[in-house]
Length: 309
Image (cartoon, rainbow, N blue to C red; front, side):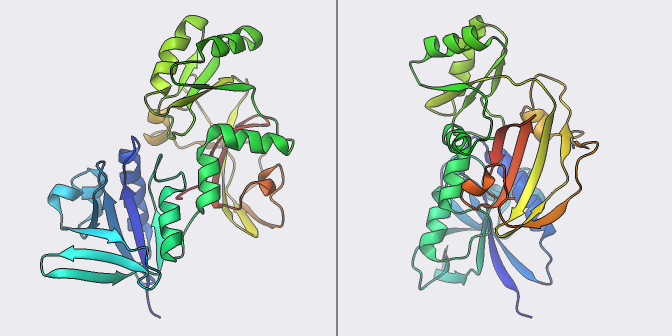
C-alpha cells in the first residue's frame, strides 16, 4: 500500500511556540511508519518556514533550526501543486503532500489562519477547519454561541486594552471574588490569573493584555474540574472523562504540561465510547471540528480547543 505523506507543522509565531514543539514531536514519533511518510515543517517565531529532516529530540529541545538539516520552504496555495516548495541550493523542488496536520498552538496556529492556507491549497486537513478553529480559539465568541443553545456559561465581561477596569471591578462587586482574567485569544493558560480581590485586577489585566488586545473577566464557578476529548464528525469518539486535580487555584501552564499531572479517571463517569448523531449539550450547534477538547467545572464549560490533536 502506498504511504500517505503527512505534513506536520510545528513552532509558529505565538507565545505557545514551545508547547507546539512538544506536541509535534509526540505526533511525529507516533505516526506508524508503515502507513505514513511524515514531513516536518518548522516555523520559527519570526515566521520563517523550513522543511526539517532531523530527529524529533532536536524539536523537543528547540535545537531543530541550528542543528538541521533545514531547507527554506513554503506551502503552495496553488491547488495544482498540492505540496511544499523547497528552496534548495540547486533550485526549487516540489514535494507532494497528501494531508496536513498543524500542531501549532495559539495565535496563527489554532485560530483558523493556517487552516485557511491549507484550505486554499486544497490539501486535506487533519483536525479542524477555519470556522471551528476561529470560533473555539475566541473565548468570548465561543461562550456566546454556546449560551444561545442553552449551555450554562459563567457570567463574564470582555474588556479592551486601555479600558474596562471599572467594568471588571463592577463584575467583582456584583458576583464576588475570586474572578478569572484571561486573554480572549490565547491558549495553554498563558496570561490567565485568578483574582482574589479588586486590588489585583489591574495587574491581572496587564498580564492578559500581553497576549491579546482583549481580555475576558469571568466569575469563578466552584466545583470539580473535568476534561474530555472528542474525536470525529458524524460518529463521535469520546475519551474517558478525567478529574483535574489542582495544586493551585486553576490549571496553569506548569500543571497542564509538566509531569506528574496526568489527570485521574472521574469516579462513576462513562468510559470512552463511540456515539452517532448530534453531540448534544450545545456542541451540535458549533461547527463540526473533527477534534475537540472540552474542560468544564460542573455544567459550565470553560475551555475548548478545536485544533491539532
